[in-house]
Image (cartoon, rainbow, N blue to C red):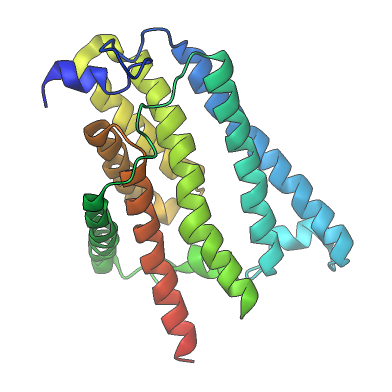
Length: 259
């Protein structure tokens, strides 16, 4: 792919070849993304506090924050709150900061089934990269996320993490944040785009708040951003992300089923 094509992938108008900086207030897009993330965290905290009050949870919000296996509804409310902030950022970026959706970002193609395999490969590659370090707490975030969920609550959290999270995170991190960073660095050509890929991947990993998972999530973030650049769609990155998360979910389900 030539440098012209690399720059044109995020063009503001689906029908022209202008670089992604054309018509986009890049700083406003990035600020909308950062503000949306903060808003999401605040909404999530408020929802969890409300849930703790309704459930009369012993110790309230402070006890939930330190629980090793919180109730399933804590993580469900946390995701819903976070996605509320993501949605707000998407609205602000598209309505007020000049960001226009990629022309065919939701289009599905028959060949997209290959991205299911890519998600599995990336997850296995991350697992293999971590294997030599023998990190006993590596799977702790997944265990913490599902807590003591069983039956319907386990299935619900599975749907939220395997389907909901990839959809909302790709729309937010790749559809808004990455494109805002790409617009900001458009004048630097290939190097600027590469910087946007890396920066968005690092922010994606940082947003998860899991130090041990940081390197693996950053690697995933790079793969997902490159997919958006190469395909000019969000669907491939969403499918890859879903598949990546599904591997962890299936592994956890199998582990619990064996007990």
